[in-house]
Image 1 (cartoon, rainbow, N blue to C red):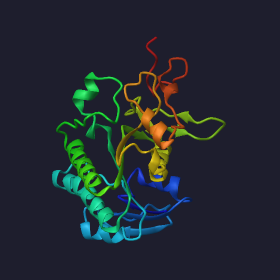
Image 2 (cartoon, helix red, strand yellow):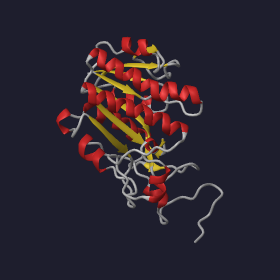
Image 3 (spheres, rainbow, N blue to C red):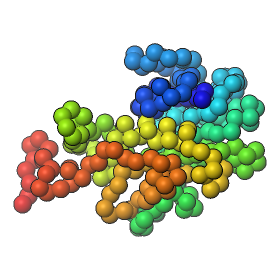
Image 4 (spheres, rainbow, N blue to C red):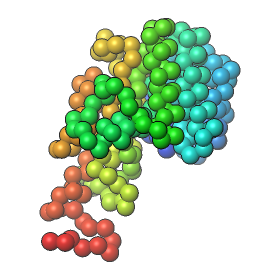
Amino acid sequence: MKVLILGGNGMLGPWAVKAMKDRHDILLTDINDPYPEYKGEFQKLSADDIDGVVKAAEGMDVIVNLSVLRPHRQLAFDVNTMGNYAMMLAAREHRIKRVITTGPHFQMVGQQYEEWDHDLNPDMPPAPGTRLYAHTKALGQEICRVFSKRHGIQVLTLLYYNMKHTWNLGGPEATPVYHDDMVPYSTAWQDCGTAVQAAVEVPEERLATKCETFFVLPDLPHAKFNNEKTKRVLGWQPRYHVEALWNKDHRTPPSGLTEAF
């Protein structure tokens, strides 16, 4: 398939490209020059450039929007919200059947959910709260939902919690590496990228509706977040796990710290 990636030069883009480059023809776009390792087709383009996105999408089978802007109010709206609008206009114009959009878990699971509830799943009513990042991403997701309903476009939304390249891959087994800002919900970048691939390739008949949301999270025993739908529908499985960091018998404490028991 021919895949257009918007905002592909950020942190997630290289891992999505790595997962798909031998399987699909990719047009990578971003406002910045491509990362040095990228050798494929590239176009400098902002995700909120409606005319540019529509033009770049001609002849494509799938559009993947990985663009994100967090701190600046106007730019966050332009990229996070209007970027999805541009993508959906392009899909409608060229009769593209599937788009993939991505974002943080809290564009659906706001503070009131996360602090008080358990077994959070991607089919709950969205409650993003008022944070700029979450709110502008949630607006973009709502735009996708409306276009999906009116024009029959398949929209698959991948929501991530915390992404980390936290695994040593040498030796017989991959082992996690501790970072000061890690949380138990950390997903390896490799797994984040293969989730995009799975969303691009999942057969239409496995989707219950034209508009579906998925949590991309590792398996965790407390099951605060539920990733069952992602594994069942997309066929995605997290390869890398962090339980060794939370196990008293196996965890290596961070430098300068000692176990309290």
